[in-house]
Image (cartoon, rainbow, N blue to C red; front, side):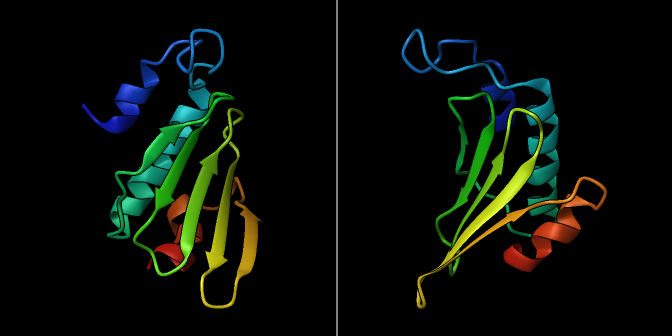
Length: 109
């Protein structure tokens, strides 16, 4: 069983009995695309977490720059990076019409 399959089993209230929504079907589908794209690019991660709102967060702690990919409950995907040497923060919302792997390649290669 993959970590995303495990996370898909979470039910509402997973965080403390009240907070923490189950991961939405849209978020799970897009998170699977992100995981597959990362693997395709040779940069898969085991740092995958549910978000309280019903999404999924990927985190690459071993990357040159801090990299987080958030999949919102709606299925929207955003990338957050911090260049450690310069302290520059970048936030990018990924396009729906373009392949996830193509868009993540800039950060994962």
